[in-house]
Image (cartoon, rainbow, N blue to C red; front, top):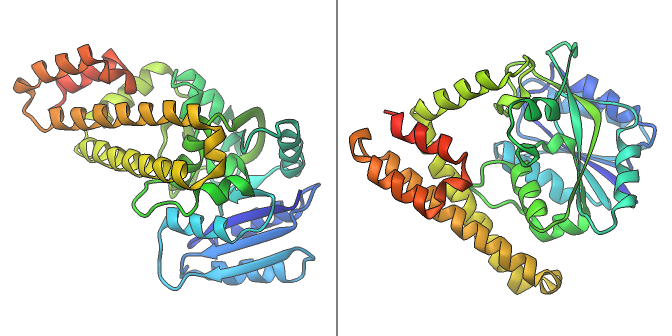
Length: 326
């Protein structure tokens, strides 16, 4: 399989050279590296171009005509890759030398799957390991493996990217788009091997609690979730999630009409659509309930519980948070 790396950059000069070196030191080198730079102002693109110029790897460094933002920049990089297996790549991580070879082996073992995930070691900004991984953090706080969304820990077949790209304008995160669709279509596989160091330096795009380098006991996570629910931005987050579901549902309906593969997936797609529609209703109802003063919410929350809407969140815990939030 031809291997491509899709690297999205923006003002990443502090860490980009370490990352590029780790890509060049792979035991199975990539065939292609596509870099999309979102108009960096710190010389990131020049550093990347200098490091790649003297290699035998096919490469392109594209500077966007205007600043697109994180999700659209990654979408553009993924679209430009020509390999059979494409690896999204963050600018500030470090890949262990065996990453590509191991993920190639996983892809060969699962010809029916399209998206492949692996674990990540967590470190501070100096790549000092914290003796914990992303999956371990998720397990400790009881979120479930479906909470694992990391584009930097992903390999994707080109055939699947052709089906799901471009990522719609307004969708929140490129990795959530790809992994969510793959999981719901039954096309996702995970290995628990840790194949990169995920560097946490304070400027990372993802604020997911399981990305924190500090140990996360369940009590601390509960406090985090309650604080997040009480924060003014939580209602906006529900509104954003409803928009994401609407875009996902629109893509699914187009997929049914346009894709020959969708005919074979008809039953899976039918179930997927029903789940999306139920989740959209629940998200809208929860948003509506939280628009009301706390004293007027109890009846709405009780009706949501009886209708099963809170199963799309954290069940009774979410209902209790909604009753107590200001």
